[in-house]
Image (cartoon, rainbow, N blue to C red; front, side, top):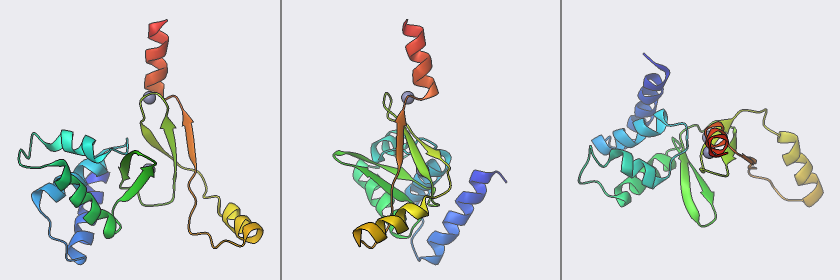
Length: 149
Ligand SMILES: [Zn+2]
Ligand SMILES: [Zn+2]
């Protein structure tokens, strides 16, 4: 069994335990997310799956993502007015984002918990979480750039 197959089975167990019905579309959305490393938008998922499910709409994809988010299988990353991106890696990790193509890649670094406690001391806030994002140009976009010159 591959890593993603194992993850998919675990996720399906979580769905079952939560009493969530596993429709073929929900299964496909979950499988797509688990195999994707770019943190897709609902639209990306829709485009990838519409061939397989001609009756599916973007709204259906959103609805499935909402269900998956509510039971903690998927994390939604919001970026102001831009479309939300979806991440099925719910462990603590950071993201690095390509300024040219918008791709988001996981970046593993020890969680900066001391920032949270310092912020609490300094501001009196009760910190719930923090988000750190690094921006740059991915390898693919760097290559495209070099070819142009
Ligand atoms: Zn890029
Ligand atoms: Zn991620």
